[in-house]
Image 1: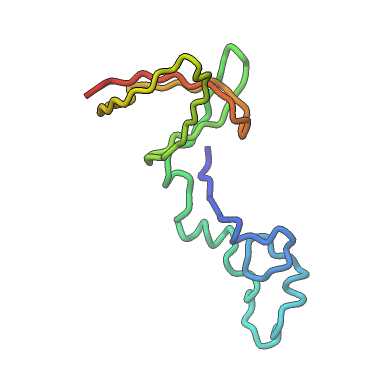
Image 2: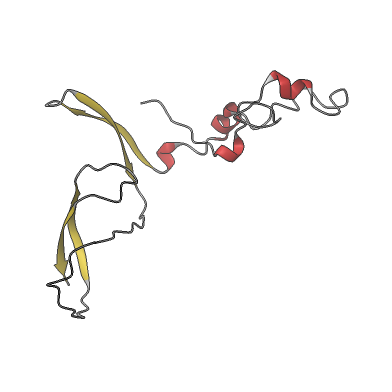
Length: 134
């Protein structure tokens, strides 16, 4: 895969009407104030080319991007392996009619976890983890 450059939405003008943002249009340049006094290209700063030339904000800086082929399904997926630690919140909901309340604190380490496919923002899903006590 070729290098992928990341840019914040704050750096973009979806409607194209703001100078010096990614996606600037002719309309923004045409209505720019002081256009006769401004230097050439004054409305064209902070474009994708500028991000690319800076050598920063590439996906490779944050992890590994790749393609994964599922031969049984005949599908190709885009994968991204992050090289940083991220915090996730897992909420467990269960019937509490037969649950006893115990407090037991022990240090442990997640050995492995598997998350079954689920729909984003559905508030439902299954995660299976193996934890080793220290």
